[in-house]
Length: 499
Ligand SMILES: *Cc1c(COP(=O)(O)O)cnc(C)c1O
Image (cartoon, rainbow, N blue to C red):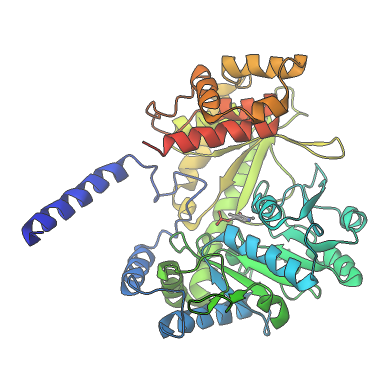
């Protein structure tokens, strides 16, 4: 290996990556209203990159060898204690929201001492899918509680009747992802505390925004939703969402030490080093931790508060924009930085939120289509379009508001998106009983791939700028059995990311 050759190849790799990155969705500037959380402050990007580089060679596996890892983790947990009002809380920095949710469930299961084959978790319909993943991975039964389709908040009485003898954890959201609604944490906590069941507040999405939502000028204060509420046993908040860190950092806090200890996997019973893991991974990067730590240090509480006030101004402007559009409505009563838009069925001329969302896309703003959701009690949460508001949204809020209004007029009278024709035929085959869900789920990859290609979703064809045609994919989710669409989408993504 010749040093010049290596340098040249390294430069080539970086220039290739630079050109690949040019085709990605724009991560900055407020034009994509999901996935990314742009503070609008360049200094946060640079301090995060510098901090990540400083710990690049470190292995987060062993904080006793790499003391910087322990020091930064302690600091972030202290910060979490302050902002989430849990002076005694303890916990861990994880790699992201999903890992925090998984570990909250694992800790609750082990703390409760659930025996193999038993144990359940109670989830409102609007709880994040990461908890379904946790139940699957950790062998727990899911008890799903319908939410009020009007408010989209969970009804505490429904939670009370859903809790089973083997329930190890109840989850509430602050706020939930689909509609941005804050669940009634205190009312649910009263029930779980009386029953001796753990309660997790999933503040992955909005925790680091809600903590400063009640500005000094705010009249309608949020009800308490964090460790101020007795009975809350754990709380997750993503540093890589409204903590503005690059992906790879979330905070999971527990109200007491024994619950935190139940999160650990520790084993000395093998011929290697003692394995003592608070998180799912063994060897792990400290980059997310360091980046989040540096950003939090840079912003301080006052910096967070100022960014949240920008989010609030933009959110209020956009909520008012939707209210003024005939045929659309805001779902429920979102309090934080995200909200969902549905058809206003009481209007003479309701607009399809996905057709509208796709049209907003033609004005340069990418919004996220979400499917309708039939709940266990027969009520249906409507199809919606999701918007995540970040500090930088404030800079483009007038342009976005105008795009939302213009898009509504442009699509007035346009019918809802349809699934690709081949999938409509497949849906008819399920309806007539000529194909069963079991048969579809046992299709080998090759046949599932062929079904995708027939539906015009060829994983090896280039994807148009702006991504997949999500309205038609969501229409397929509506038309087909949900497990079948999940299988087809897994097939698509697996093939897409493989040679
Ligand atoms: C994003 C999110 C999660 C999962 O987080 P990831 O960081 O995407 O793994 C969990 N709960 C809520 C409410 C979220 O918004």
